[in-house]
Length: 171
Image (cartoon, rainbow, N blue to C red; front, side, top):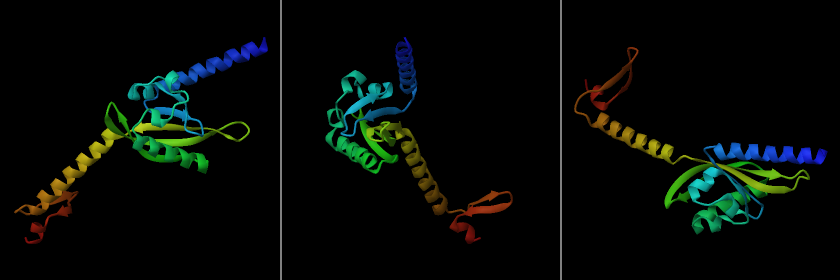
């Protein structure tokens, strides 16, 4: 009877953990030390059009273009061999469109201390990178206009000049 209760509790914990992982807005995955998938969350399934049940035993080469799969494998090996969490910037195609991810990868160990898996949590930062690039271009344009203006321009902040163009110096 006690083992039935424990088994029931373990199944409930597993379902609760799966529910949490399936509602995380990041891509979450776990691979064995040889790079075969053990688990993917719902976000992974949605973005890469695969089911968790279909991924068991598959590798990145089965899902991604060769160059991307190779990069993922190199990063997984770094974590596996170092035994330490590491962060990477990785690019993965989703519906043929490259997306950039900040990936945190970390080892998961068995009770006896041997490596069970490499787990990853990858957050899509594509829009953030695009926004940063747009802001950088805007700032470059602003600086160019500011410096090439035929008139003196200066910026005041609390009665102090915080910036000025070269024409200001000619005043």
